[in-house]
Image (cartoon, rainbow, N blue to C red; front, side, top):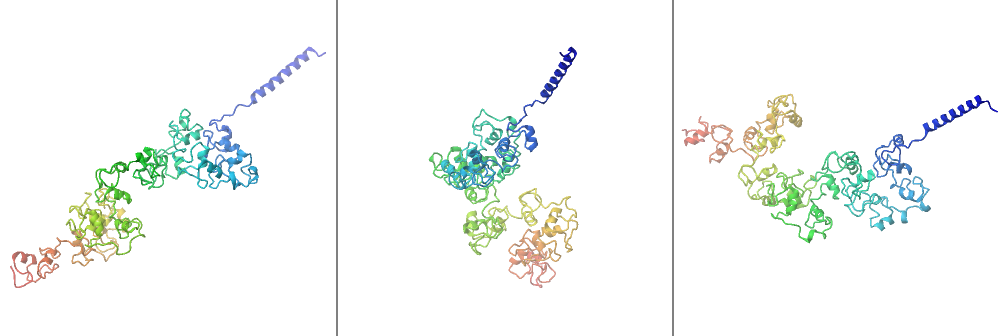
Length: 583
């Protein structure tokens, strides 16, 4: 028999042991691991492998991190997922997972076949076998049959129609305010308006859209568009709108204003009407393409979309109809953008190039030399003059002493005598001629050869323009010819050449370069001479001296040497060529 005190001691020990064991057990009992994003991986596991515990799909490949880890794919690599064929055995990872074979072992294939023919062949690598594509009606040789920038396999996998360019993850199929992509990433149903992600998952929260164009920054990076520029290709349509409507946000020639199928309706009109903008036989209500009130070749709705006036053939007043400008790639709202210009600087105007079938924007593509008649030799072909409304037989239609060709080339109106290079069109204090020579815009008051604090040497050229012309911004007279750099540039002389200065008569027209510059004529063109110049200062202009039926010398104030100036004699009625005939 065990003594009572020993029994009590034994019982106490047993109780203590039990409590210890129980306490240890309670203390070490496993607690359910947190999985904040519900992707099948605990937060701790995600931290260990480097994935985001608050994002189901860390690498953005449309596969949850948990599914990727479970099937042996890298949840941090967007190029490693079930649609791929990781072991290059001809079967996609998805097919192998479904068949129970190893997607990372080329020797382990479904049914032991080679994967290159039959049901499992995937010629275009879009994640759908060729047989599956034929059954669906998609093209087994094209990854993206409907051209909506989503592979056929990805669309089918996520419940979208690979034959409908308007049905894809960028859309908001259920109109719940979340794009299909956002819903797929959040794990909600993109076709059920009652099933939406938390607000933090939307583009207003976690999915940043820096430029506000309707595409998240991540989506823009995938597409190759600029996440900080609403209109990457500069076609006046936001990237998001283009993608949403099946147009290429990287191609400025592919957008809703175009009439892709040439049926008389713009892509926008067709999209709005529910017809196919790529099918000429499918038109809204079967009509003829809408009203063209001004008859310029663009429908009223098209003009409103472009920003032109549907009641004015020539909205920008450059003498070219809006329709002609738009068709040939010029801006019908910009008077300086039109076919008469020589956009590529190859010596042929845009009109001549368009008529010859060459590219007006490529200097290496131009018509054969001498093509295109120019009856009056003003630099514009007869066809160009007829288009402009100028006279093909008169060099200077508006009589402002500037040839039509020169005016058009520099953006002035050859039919307006008050529009020419001598004017100061932008009112910045510099004549159009001076600005054209300097390289600033004669139609932009903010762009001018400023004589400001930015002119370190005070020679009349800003430091910016000195750098442009290669002169010394700290030396008034870089070439040492006693003429300030600014004066030389304004006079169309070379400020880096000590032998090129305003006293010369480079074009040999009898007027010094300085006289020509002072009268805003071209010192390099003998056809351009000042009518008001009086080189010998005798009171008769040079042009008047040449017009008088006497052999007067415009560079000698007293042709007959009788001590009386030619002008004085002419006004007094005496003969300025006869030294014996004086007033």
